[in-house]
Every structure is written in structure tokens, then in C-alpha cells.
Length: 89
Image (cartoon, rainbow, N blue to C red; front, side):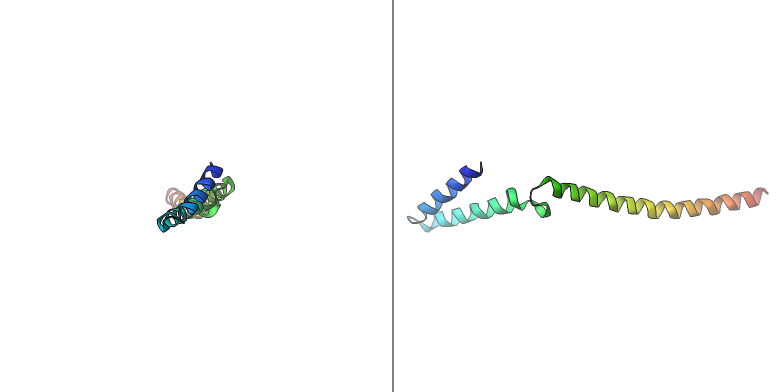
């Protein structure tokens, strides 16, 4: 696929000597290939490692959120339990 894209870009560049519109088309194709192709998928660079990093970052944020709020709830539950025991006893 990459070889066909490269050949198409070279052909369009060659047609550019006949009409400058083909140079524009070739430039747009090169831009599209670099922006949305192999090397341009977000911060991951098109690799699975980048997707794994995104997953790991989301997981770490979720873990921090869970730890933070589970501690708050645990403290509240402990206070409520103490109040209940004091009322009973």
C-alpha cells in the first residue's frame, strides 16, 4: 500500500510539469498520508505501544480516583459506625 501511494505521489508530481494543479494534489496527498497515515495517528505515532500508554494512563487515573474516594467513604463509614455503636451502647 505504501509503495502504491509513493508511486502515485511521484506520478502526480510528474504531471505537475504539465499543470501546477497536480502539484497541489500531490502535496495534499503527501499531507494526508503523513497526517492520517502510519506516522500520524495522535501521540502514539501509529504504534500499539501508544495505545497501550493511553490505556495505562486512563487506568492510573481511574485507580487514583478510586483510591481517593474510597478512602473518603471509608472514613465516613467508620464515623457512622462509631456513632451507631455509641447510640446503642
